Length: 155
View 1: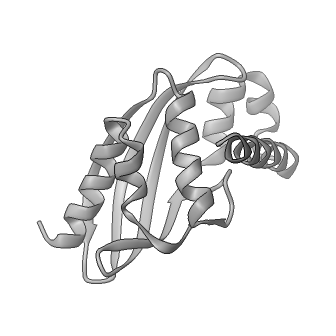
View 2: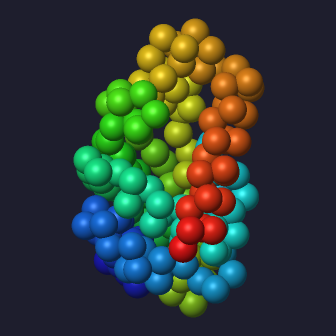
């Protein structure tokens, strides 16, 4: 296992064990994150996002596999099993992560997952019927951004 594979292994091991500071330390001082819900976060936002998700995810379980890294990039598969707090519905989200790395730190992190599959699980019938629409996706994004901002202000 090379140094960058160890970095990503460490990141997900910390996530699995809800070690917020361990996860946060994996990011460079100037880093970004994006996925289908949280778009274009800067370093402070992404560090806060992980803290918020871990603290609010009472039954959050993380699994990860297929870590590959070279000198500048990395990829991993991971999944999060949890109860979506808004609806009380169980979710199993399967994610493909890609990273850009520099000097042993993450400088860019992109998570890709099927938003429609997530919406069906998290929202139930509304997700099944409307989870593919930009309306639902934008509504979820706005709520997530608002929650993140509120969390950051409270810290």
